[in-house]
Length: 464
Figure 1 (cartoon, helix red, strand yellow):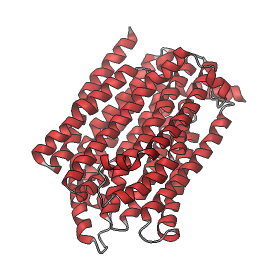
Figure 2 (cartoon, rainbow, N blue to C red):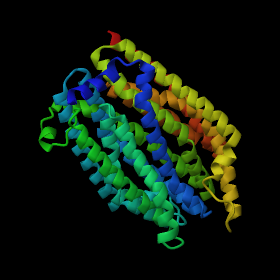
Figure 3 (cartoon, rainbow, N blue to C red):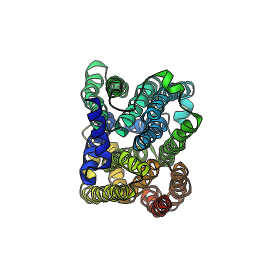
């Protein structure tokens, strides 16, 4: 029975028609990405029901800290997961178990360290991220619960999901993350409007999020332990100690660039918040709303790319480069189609989409209406970046699948440090907050050209 399941996973990666294999892997991942996004957005949605723009601005400040959870989970989740998939392609399941165990304990350690560091320097970090005297109290309450207390279950659950997905257990990984998201949709209003008193809505949202993440983590740990019978996965500390220095280096060769990629994206968001807060808190709140809304098509496209990654990794290591290239091209076409639809939708319904996140029927209606006006303008501009963002995501995941850490890191540095972040300051200085919004499509477009060049060169080198 166990052998049959193992062969089934290998057949999915190696011989099932590419559209079917990609559909099988990507659909559960897309669903979990969207639900995970929804539950991250649920906090903002319910906080928006208060009509308090300063609470909304506080969630914008803490978003970058929450996104660091994703970056740190990638260090061992994608670094270890992509290597396990390549080892499966080479029929080296024993080494895969050592890698998965090492990645599990690595995720635990990095989660505890992040919690400790944020706890020690919370208020100074919030001020650097753009918190003002009007928003720092709300931001402190949210970050204390979600990051200082809740970073470990959040980081570990995402790392476990990556490891499960890269060994063929995409449905289990997606169910675990989705369960946490759905639970948060119910717990948010309960804690915000029923259990805690008025004025404590941000704290209620934070408590609900942390409880949801913890329950999701417990389920994923159960699914991971159960999958050990049918996949090269392990939670044994003795297996973690057996990993060789060369194999450990291979984890970090992909994991560090992947973490830095998300970390640099997070740094870019920090710069957006700092520049936006320099205008006023309403610009910051409006940009914060847009950075949540625009993540919907991005979540779908990232789901496609994450579903693609283990198939590309397996076929790259097994030498089936024709199937690898077909998988890459199929995933890119699917993502570009999603991006095109998102641009049309947001151009037509920008105001309606942003109004979902901030009530204009409160005593602070005038401030809320100003915030919505900023958000609608920013969304119509920034949504134009969706196709080129897909090219950048897609290229990065392809290179991670092939174990090309240096190329992944080079792309990340060029994309964020040489293009997007400098363009923020330049265009904001020239055109104000409108220029700040224009920096995203401009920076991502230039980075996409470089990404396509890198991917073409990487694939050509793999033939040699």
